[in-house]
Length: 166
Image (tube, rainbow, N blue to C red; front, top):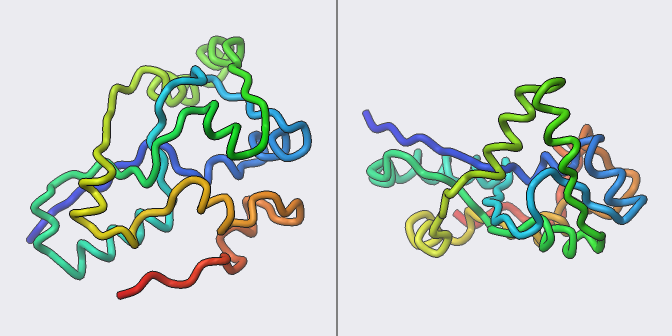
């Protein structure tokens, strides 16, 4: 039997949550507790599923043992630009979360201190380009700017994208 662990850093779907998206949509401000120039490795849940399916169909790919998945790399400032919003780093929330939400603090600290570097070009060569969605394509495919959509219907409403080729 083969084993291959898939690791993600930041799921793009997290940005659809009620505590993030409304401020971006309505106030045109992306507030994040990570420095604006910190490179973040982004992936979507769908991409993780595509990669898992690819590995099941091609067991020789399990030779990779562990894959840190990144469909795109952007800084928070670059993400804000994609949203058409201003970026603001929230240092106060970072420190408050240390005491009031320690699990969230741990996640933010990971994003802030992670030195992970993923070779996306190599991942695309190994797994195929159809397994990866860029951040800007994700926003388009999920109808990011449609105010009637929510995190709750993100998984149930059809996306603007065709199924990947087999």
